[in-house]
Length: 157
Image (cartoon, rainbow, N blue to C red; front, side, top):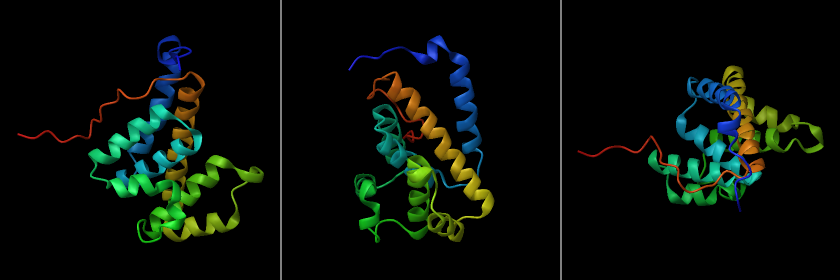
């Protein structure tokens, strides 16, 4: 598959706007591990190879287990692998991304509110909005995957 165009080169202002969203997410108090699990799952739903490469490497660099990375698409069937907060975040992320029947069901909203404050839920939603935006740019323009190096890798020595 060949890259269609380099949106980062032809429209750098778009990248700056998207980076501003991502930086706002980084400034939240949400655990980095949780955010990375969510953005990884959303990237799976959207089929974004570039983002899957990036966030799988970030998750590993943040000491996420291989089992949790591999099992995330089946998180509902793995209740002992993901805690209730992670499960609520994943349910919220899927519902916000897919918008089945053009809505997020009340039961998923209520589940999310049991695990997150209103501010945290707004912050989590921003993370979902941001990764959906990145996914759409990368999928639409076929950004190549495989070359990402995580900034989270700890230097030894």
